[in-house]
Image (tube, rainbow, N blue to C red; front, side, top):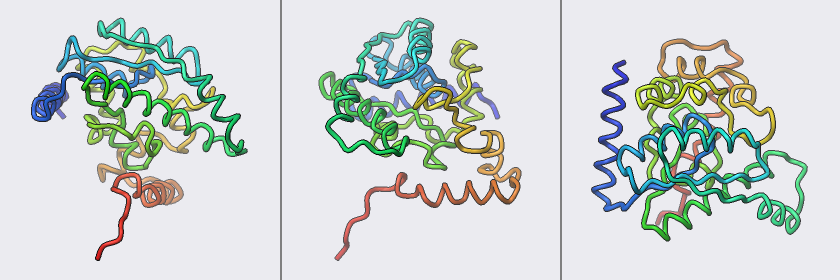
Length: 238
């Protein structure tokens, strides 16, 4: 694959879409991970002066915030930090406290989505989402959280290709070499939680190699069960 051309075409597509809808700029979450860094770099190419990265710690890992600031510095990107930890804690106090860690953790990306749309509406910007094709295929995102966006520029690019695009965009090595993680809790990584690597997943999606039966069954099940995340909510037809 010619990643240089893919990256150039991607930047042009984002630019053309922004012109078509009359966007004044872009706003997006900056997490310190590779996907948000790629989205930030794309935004900066299209809107050098009107791209805003929001760093939104929410009972989260300090290193992610540090990495987000390093990405912003490398790109010359404007950022704002909005600490949502107290908001999260107050919501937990006011709500029934579930023993299910994922139910609690998924509140964090939903609070971030709400914050992004506040800034987007205030500034007349569009919200850029960070989901890549591998995560989109599995439904490995939070509904109405990180999947809530106006434009998903990398949703058709597999995770293993994202690393190549990141290099073409000139992103620093530390973010390219960082283990992919949603940062929902300390020590969490995407591949540990999924139970297989992105290389295995992407090879299966491309039709290059079928994984062992147990992994194939898990991938197929995740894809099927997450269909509701990729379509509009069903409604009655008459």
